[in-house]
Image 1 (cartoon, rainbow, N blue to C red):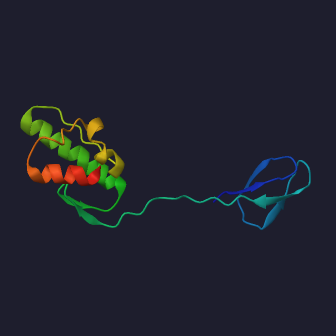
Image 2 (cartoon, one colour):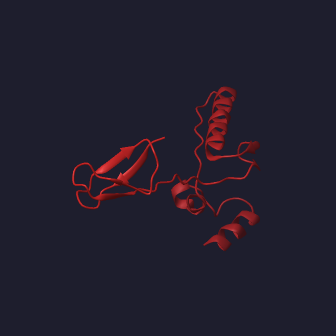
Image 3 (spheres, one colour):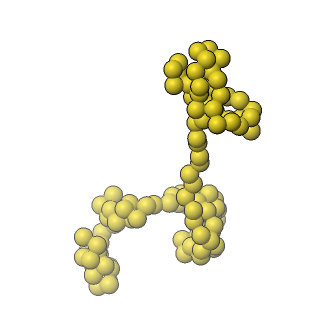
Length: 116
C-alpha cells in the first residue's frame, strides 16, 4: 500500500510504502503530514426494482440490468431500445421527457397536478 504525505513548505507530494504520522521531506527537510484520502460510494440496499423486474444491490448492477432489459426488448420488438437511469428530479421534468401530462386518465392528471 502506498501512503501519501504533503510537505507544507515546498508543496511536494511524497509517496512512501510505510505508514507514519509524518515523514521528513528530502527536498527541504520539513515535516510532511499525511494526506488522508478516502473513497465515497453511495450505498444502495438490495431491493426489488420494478423497472428491471429484478433485485439490484448497487448502481452498476442496476445499470447492467437496464442494459440487458433494453437488449431483450430490442430483440423482441425489432426496435432499438436504450434505457438510462433518471434522477427523481429528471423524472418530474415532464417537458424534458416529452410527456403530455394532460393526456390519459384522471389519475394521471391528479398526480401531475400534485407534483407541480
